[in-house]
Amino acid sequence: MPSDDRQSTDWIQNVLPTAESKPVCLNWPIWMAAIFFGATISGYYVYPEDLSFLSVSLLAAVPTTLILAGALGLNRKFTRRNKKLEIYQQRLLLAVRAGNVGIWDWPDVKKEDVWWGETMYRLLGYEKGEIKPTLEFYMSRVHEGHREPLKSHIQKILEGAKPTPFEYLVKTKGGAYRWFRTKGVVTSNLDNGVSRYTGILQDIHRKREAEEQLVLANKKLKAKTEEIEQMVYLVSHDLRSPLATILTIAQDALRMEADPNTPSEEKQELLTLLLKSGHRMNDFINDMLSLESVDEQCKKVDLVDTKTVLEELKESLKAQTESTDSSWVVDGEPHKLKINKHMLTQLMQNLLSNAMKYGCPHPSNRIEIGFLKNKERLQITVRDFGNGIPRDKCLEIFEPFKRFSDSGGGSGLGLTIVKKTAEAYDGKVWVSPAEGGGSRFVVEFPGSLEVA
Image 1 (tube, rainbow, N blue to C red):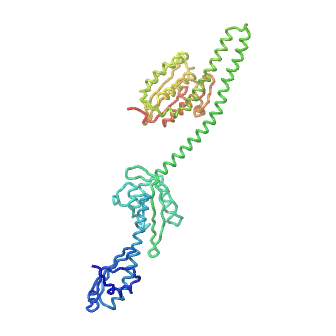
Image 2 (image 1 turned 90 degrees about the vertical axis):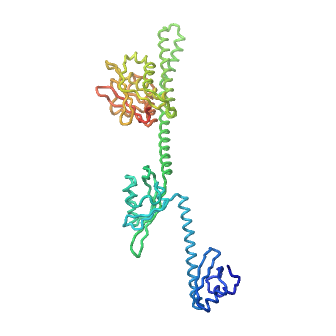
Image 3 (image 1 turned 180 degrees about the horizontal axis):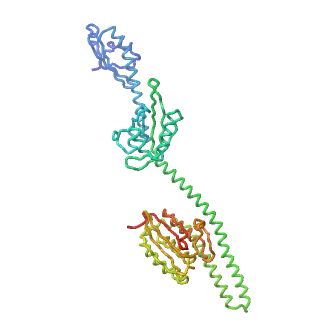
């Protein structure tokens, strides 16, 4: 029970460093026993501002008073310091948890053992204590392309370089690589000469992904801007030609209409030219619209059997096949794909139409169509036996409005549409001179597009 007799504790209040303590279990008879009989007694004091709770033992009267004063002052000092340290530790722990920051410590840089905080384990997918953290183990988890640069970075810091952050990939327990950033400082013990390296680890995977997506988006935007600028220039040039032809024919038609002696055959020929120019301009505009809508169209995916697409193309290109007296030879099993049917049809139509336009001077007039699988990649090939494309022009041929022959007409955008369609599905297209003459076009798609 607390004592109400304040006189019994006045003497001890006078020797305390401050008068803030409150006696909670001391009374007059106990103090008298200590003074007259030298008995051992205990008292408890509590400090309201920080709730320090002290225990004091007394052996005798006068000597004990002096000893007690020193003991209380020292105990109070350490109690306050420990309390502040505990508060700082709690604040640090809360900050670490809130920031999702792992703490690591390499207490002796000449040894392998390191210490990890609880969050450090969690960032890498482990439970605390599940593994023994060592420098060798950690380095084994660092991406092989970043391992040596990280070692070099650490070595520079140990040699006295200014501490700087370092970003790298680390394989987590689940096997996936994630981006982390680390930064540490070196401290040295002057007594034993041991260097200590301590720091933090932050998961920055989402940040790096966002940065990479931003870089990719900027590249696409730049490419799109350049493409638009080029298209504006080329469109103005290519539209001018058929438009000029139409205007000239219209003027001639007016002149012929004014002359009753103009033969009907000339009028017929003039109207035919007018119709061809109109068709050419219409095809050009349609191809322009198709090129512009490739990305959007390719997002709409169908389950497509290329065998069905090929049969439909045989029917729609029947007139061209007959006029060129060409034949189609199919090799391999047609694929079943998750792809936009309209875009795949347009892709194959452009390749087959070009093969018949430019590849049928050969006596056989044969067009070879192949369906192949190559290391989880799907290929559609179209080979003709024409004059072929010069090897140094095999990349340039896919650029807008590039033609190496005026005999076929067309808008000059067909192969550009083929290339853009393939790339929309993470595929690619190329052409090479075929053995024995002609050209061989290859469109390659990832195997993930195939329907099992």
